[in-house]
Length: 445
View 1 (cartoon, helix red, strand yellow):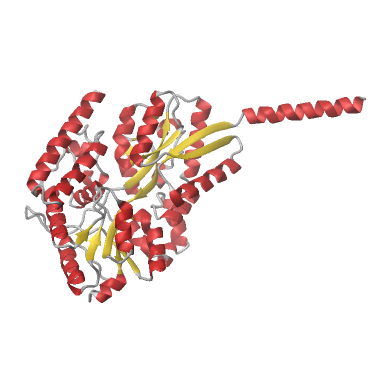
View 2 (cartoon, one colour):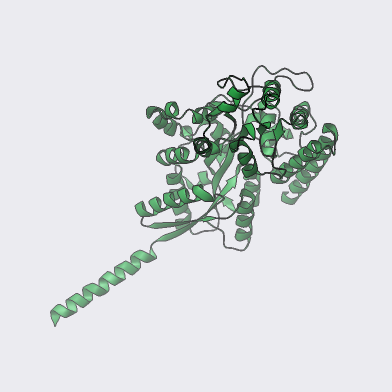
């Protein structure tokens, strides 16, 4: 009888201990904007974290586009049901700060848990606001030129000498189209991101007040020589049949299809597509080349550029929302620091093409001779490292940035369609953008 009681007592104690352990598991929700293969990779990484951190259980949820994810997070916070972690695109940085729903990541860290000195310069420059990291850099990218070396050969061009300037792009495009090597010379999505990058490449700010970093931006700078240079060249490329796109705004997949199918010899798109473009090249039997984003050797105002200033870090970072119990905030921080550590930075880079955001991750890749064996990744990374630090290449901060981006895209669309001149479209865009900025500023005053 005593033996039975002892066994029963042990069973009860075991059940109680198990129940207590289960109660101690901290549940964390992470919202992101990645579907497809990247979503599955995130899920595998989360599973690895959960397995090695039994006291914390993270659930990752795909919430649609960057804009959809940010809007959903703000709405959820207003309803008192915010996720713990949210991926926000780079141009949502000021909006994220102003929303008031996030706690600065650095405020949750003890000492230098972020290991800020280990972050690549261009990445750190963008996300350090007023001396503080409000979010943790994660998927970082910039635009590069991808090109089909076989089409270059067919057009009589050196496959190892891609165009570097706007002027060379026109020359190369003429040879490609006139030779019949491809129907069009180049494609990229009709997206403001490229306009923003070319502004930075010329050392031109997109907003006043030091690109919104010396003080809150109050107006856009869309009628200067930089903006006119970009749109004038873009229009010429389109009118001559050199540049083409799907006909839809922000249609990344459409431009990918044009390039991969051989309808265009070149494509400008994100470094994050390196992995997929390499697969596409193998599947479609052509040799892939990568190069820096082309820049104008001379602006419409006559200013000569002896070098490109560089590019702005694109992509997104991860934010932690407020108003959760301290143990949940600490668990969210633990996951975030693990998710962006050296080992995972290497893993994420190899699988996606996004930058290895940590210097230590680059050292690992160099030791493995990764870039030597995978030269397509090299152009993307070198372009960032060769960027000259300035307010222009640091990137603009503006709460109304998502709206301004749409306004710029609509202006480009009008010019390409012949519905407005470059000057008319940019003047209209500036007026709309300035109003959007001022309306936004009033809403947060």
